[in-house]
Length: 137
Image (tube, rainbow, N blue to C red; front, side):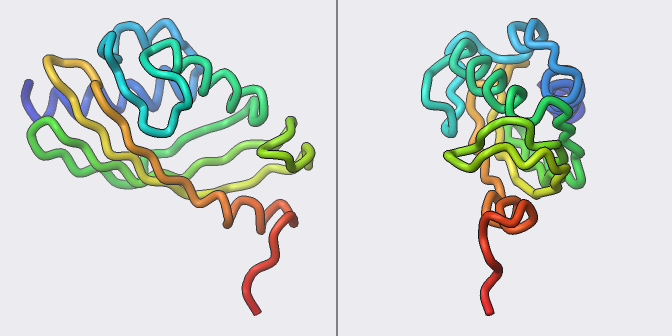
């Protein structure tokens, strides 16, 4: 696949799957042996479970692609994520407050499908914005 095709697949993932919540598109974009290194369960179903859990906590979640670098089958993405915390997150009760945090994803594609994703999120910044963690003095 070309760099432009790989970029298009990843942008479609953020737009249609993450922002619009269309998990059926995940079946088209993700390889059957997809490995999300941040998901507790493997494969496409593991990803869908993880996303459903996150969407339950942040039902209005939106992921904005700030930067993308594509080199052959690897894609690096810098993200800004917003959402209103309506559910418990890692033991912290729902704050019913809209928050913004940042993240980065590193994705590997093969044969037109995403096969691996490594994600990092600034959860500390999010918890500080919600008032659950204090910034350093």
